Length: 150
Image (cartoon, rainbow, N blue to C red):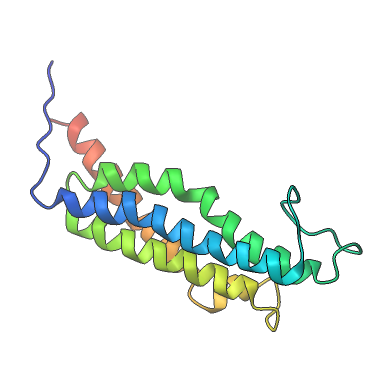
């Protein structure tokens, strides 16, 4: 059996918002880490600041943790968005924007030292990225099952 897949007309938006935009948002969020490195004097090769050694270790580590979060999901997000976008390109493209915005808000919340670290990432809109991931996962599952049942 030979399977052919038609790429929908709007699929370019999926590439733009689920491929290119996450790379740009990662650079923006990474820029926050560079700024925090200078502000809190955390030199390379330290990925995180050492409590007791770096005066503002918690403040820097929260910015860094907000940035590291993107790496935990970005490959899964892109995979399910690219698959789901073959059937639902506009939905997945919108989810790409929501995902990137959610990652940025996650970092803003997590890095806010006025908020409790346990909930800070959730209070400024961080969960938006998980909603986008789940919607794309649903689109990918639906499309994948449609290929099996053809």
